[in-house]
Amino acid sequence: MARAVGHCGLMIACGSRDELIHEHGLAHFIEHGMFKGTKKRNNTQILSRLDAVGGEINAFTAKEETWIHASFLHEHTERAIELIADIALNSTFPMSELEKEKDVIIDEINGYKDSPTDMMFEEMDEHLFPNHPLGRSILGTEESVKSFKHKDVMSFYQRCFISQNMVFSYAGPLKLEQLKVWCEKYLCSAPEVVVQYNRPKFHPFKKKKIIQHKEIHQAHYGWGGLAPSLHEKERHGFILLNNLLGGPAMNNILNLKIREKHGIAYQVDSNYSPFSDTGVFSIYLGTEEHQLEKAIRLIETELKKLREQPLTTRALNGYKTQLKGQLALSQDSGASLMFNNGKSLWVYDRINTMQEVFDVIDGITSHQLCSLSERYLNSTQFFSMAYLPIKD
Image (cartoon, rainbow, N blue to C red; front, side, top):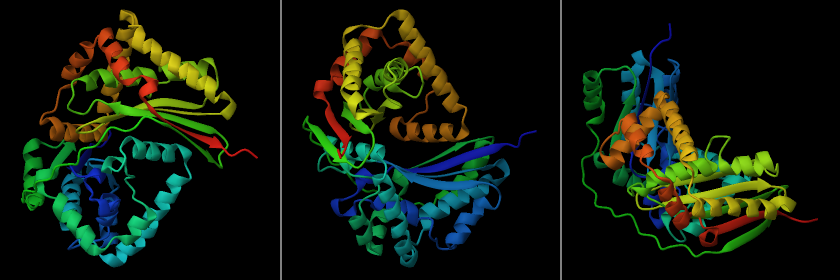
């Protein structure tokens, strides 16, 4: 008989876009630094606390939040909550350890530079949000990482890791009453200071096309543009639109047309990332250089169809059924459920049932998708970038 498993995480609603100009990469640096020592544990003790019982502890930094999360056997729930609280609230950031970690992060940055796909998304963000924190790499630069001092770390940590920015999320068999007891025991020491902070507004990007020649074998091409934010009702329709166009399923429109029918690309997809005050939509393609123009024409044809030809009732219902199935499967993962519930509670102050989500999807019409396509999926309004191989 399978043993019960639990998942929990602490979301801090503060990420790379909350960095000041001299703090580029600091949120991610702190994510690493939290594992280097607390008031009662050293680095080895932190890493061994859950590993010793077969659990996992990890963290990640995004544009607008940082997560510390764990997965474990049910009987180790208290151990996991206490450890997450210790890391989040009692980190000391020993500078001797942080200096070593700078080299690790610089290696991580260089690893991104070795990946044309990763680099393209990084550079596209820079051009979509010029001179704005949303446009900066989450990792920072080699120069910025090397410059961080202990006072910089503590300034950001004390400004952002406070109770008003925190949501604790759990998925597992534990009773709510017991969960509340442990949360109050270990998390109630979070600073309750009130910090007034307004995220800086951004100015719309300038539409342009950039071509760079690199020492690569394949051509890489990307389009990027703005999309609905987390707080716009249009986001529901746009999630469906992105899913049918270039989402994770193998039968999305771009994959069937570019890869399966014409065989001219191994990877082609679209992505939608909503933030608190805007969103980003992008299309990515990797292909041989001599096939690039054909692939771009094929993509533009499909975008035009979505703008001008409403989906049939049968096609629309099929795409809705697919999205609902994907969402249901994602909720079957305890970790995904934990992340989704925590983010939803922070952004909307509520957690919708799966049926409520399905009802919203069922209410989307073909004409709404056409309207969204007309507004957001016009390639003449996109910023575009190409990486082309250096010719011999």
